[in-house]
Image (cartoon, rainbow, N blue to C red; front, side, top):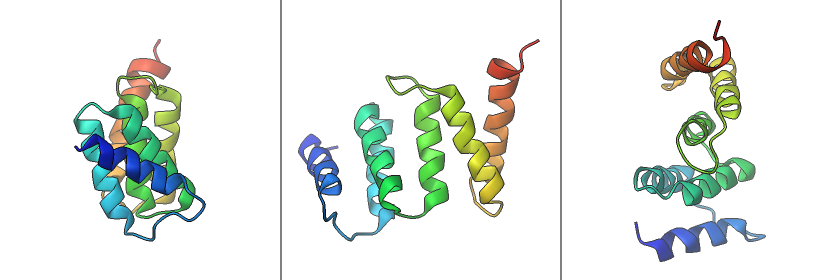
Length: 115
């Protein structure tokens, strides 16, 4: 990923008048940043897309949950679980529903409901 492009895009989204482009395009960049280890930039981008109301919302919260679940400065398993739960509760037809349900079960089994 071109670092100038990523930072320019994040800056554009933080402006008072963010660009009117398809959220999928931004989301793909966020996913690519995460895949390339640029998790802080990916987090900032996805978080801003959610704040601005871009869609598809279910996919945005799924990717953000994955970022919270993964390694890095934003790791927060409780927040990841809460986002997966939101997706399962509010988006029963989402293509991410089954995997979100699975992640909730995994997190509960290995981190939250340990006996």
